[in-house]
Image (tube, rainbow, N blue to C red; front, side, top):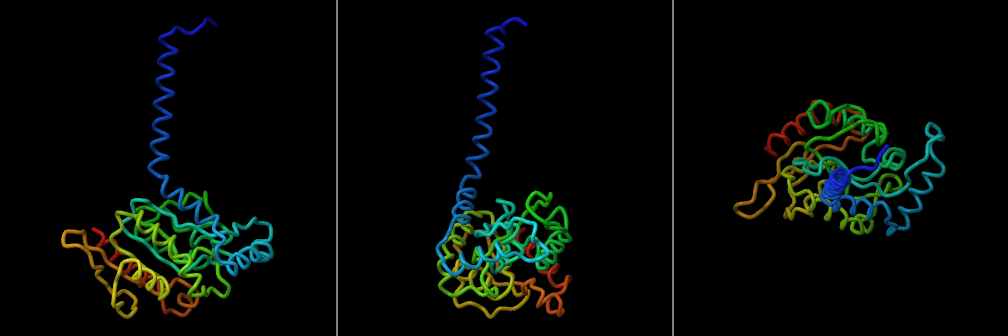
Length: 254
């Protein structure tokens, strides 16, 4: 085979440069989210949470004894252009602390993602592990505390230490118009970030207008009871109740 002509070589070089430029542009566009995710995943600021999440990841639950646990703080995830943001509490010890993705691999996540699928925010109802084909459209999922806490109860100091991550995350979500906190903890953290004072009493499905400048797009908080088994098994939170909140969130987001 003869040598390539100078023209063909030049054409090839131009194509390589263009492809590299396109890839770099994509990476640059996502860089703030990637940087935040890396900062979250490497945090060791709270000794109690570090010890617990790593203990759980080592001892494991019998059903998952052959799996390698994530065992680190869990970043938020979803559609960076989301208009709806779901704010939970913290990763579950054998759910997100195992899989590395919020509300993935536990009963609470099963309930949440099934609802997101029914209301058009997710392409499938199951959340098993990263790489399972699940994609979110128009919604982002996060939590005020990024590590699994003992008894699912972070301390006020742990909540406040982690607040900087939630602030950075919600600031990056520039298209967010409706925030759906799951439970009191997420509701309080969301109101703090958005400057809602005084904070109205928590209630499932209430609509709280977020203060803003005169010409800013309207923003809302529409809380729901948490998707914990304590609520879903007792009927405190039913599928129609959560669906109604998500449908209303989509309507308010425009």
